[in-house]
Length: 162
Figure 1: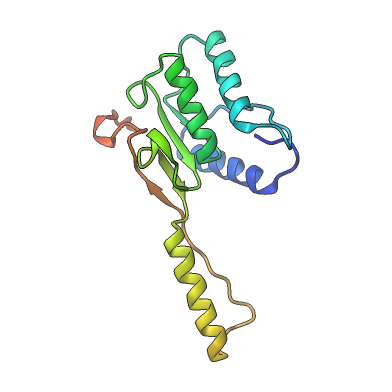
Figure 2 (figure 1 turned 135 degrees about the vertical axis):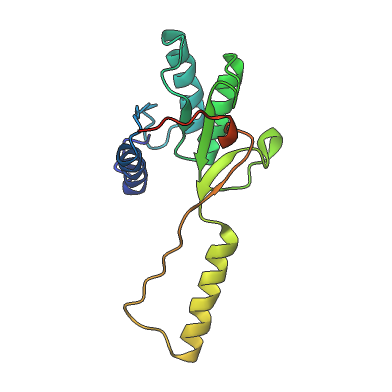
């Protein structure tokens, strides 16, 4: 997590933790202590190597990473440490960006599809050109989950009844 008051990142983490709490899920925040200007990818890899050396058995079954880029760095570190994804640990990124290389199309990610954003923007432009735009209008685009190969399929996850 970037410690330099990035409200977007704090809102994302707070929202995720609130959602998890309301659904009866325990969370643990792993903070790589990345400062503005530092390489978040290198920090993520180094942090996970240190963490996995100290914690031989993971106390969680899924890792939600605040961006797709750092999720790929986490996947690299996990692979190096012998952690099998998704058999032993599910990994979820955020952002839904097109990741080049061996993770292209494989990373499970939460975000807003670019085509939806572009479509809504074009609708706004069309409305503006027609002179129909309401000053107080807000556009809400709900996030979606792209389920790739980095999460265990729901059919393989035991369901715990409350």
